[in-house]
Length: 275
Image 1 (cartoon, rainbow, N blue to C red):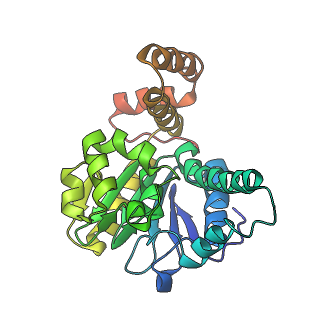
Image 2 (cartoon, rainbow, N blue to C red):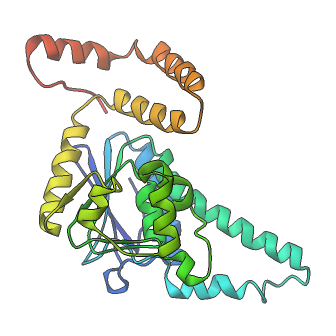
């Protein structure tokens, strides 16, 4: 990968891509530049065969404190200074910006590889939007998940209200959205917002790397097909989902990965798959 990143770091080792928000002095708040780099990195990791699993985390004490206040000020200024005298066209411009920001979050959901979020410290506002766009979420006990937008006088608009109810259920999602209360790492595990809570950030980092390495050792084609099927089934009927997976396996059952998996099983050894 040849990426020119200022606010993200990325490295790939043994199939595991570690992607880290790198604005620790601002609690990894999402600036305009960071939004753009996140999309670029998601597309690049999706296309890189050597990256089989992505671990998304934050440098420093926090995962992500939400939208950077400077970017929020720029966005709000569009209400009265969009350069267009027509209120309808000015509103359309704001809508296009929101759709573009939604696309950044969705790029991680569309990434064919499993994306694991490792959350320590703050996971607030848009940080939570980012986390719920990932396949799996893990937290340390000091994590603080906050769906903050109602307290800011707005409705969250880049994905959390659409994805969170499918993760924790509608009732819990409504409570978190309406109250804007903080959810700790242990409570997040109880609510199934995260798959597991680790005691410390250090244990979180080590534990998530172990899980990522385990996933990276599996058949990449099978992993990609499974992710696509689950995401597709979430948004379609059971009948549609069955049709989709039949079409996928109609082609993928001819893969060398299946032959290798069966041979490894018979020979009682780990499988060895190409990228």
